[in-house]
Length: 297
Image: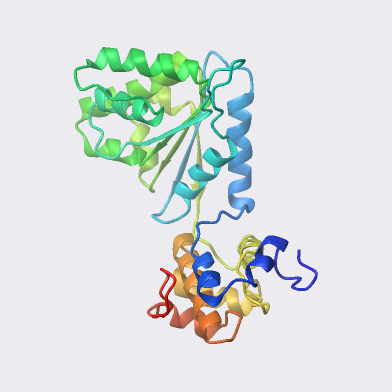
């Protein structure tokens, strides 16, 4: 933490020296705050990734409402497991690949997206079998350790036969490469695996619940506040502020983060330099007047 601003990290305190427009712009940069609800999931994924490859790879299915933080979890894992460029001594590697099942009705489309997630050029003339073989070969060469499949509940929007084939393709990837899968989806995601009971038994089911006034939320808000370049402490982890935040956001993480960003911008513009309950409520409808392109609105 900064000695001059003990409520801020050192890096955040340095942002206070920026011009107002740039300081406000910095509020809206994507930031990921590690907290209890996701740290355990990340550790579990990394355990699956780096343990000796087993005969029967397993997975985790994480469900939650829209905007609950599932995509942020996937992005955090991708950032932690960075791509290694090729060198004379080592080939390039990509520990984590990530694609969405949205509107993917057939195994051919799944392997097409798998190839794209591996940064492979697409060839429309390739058959489904050729796409599969190429994807598996490239994944082995990249030393792929984890496959993240988003919007897994979209399997339910296809026919029973298509569901079975799509899940068979996922199981094929897991078995052929001996890699775990992190599946992400809405509250219906668990039902998406019903068509393949063997695959379903490989997954542990976890949920990202809505936030409520407890220590988990307090720790998250205290950590998040330390990344907001405001000169005064907002005490976001106080019971009063937590009650306002949960009531206004209905406990949805994405809404909480967006509202805090806007409230912080309003606090800078108004010279208050801290988020108050009133500002958080105003941020529901009010947006900052600063032109984020760099010029005053």
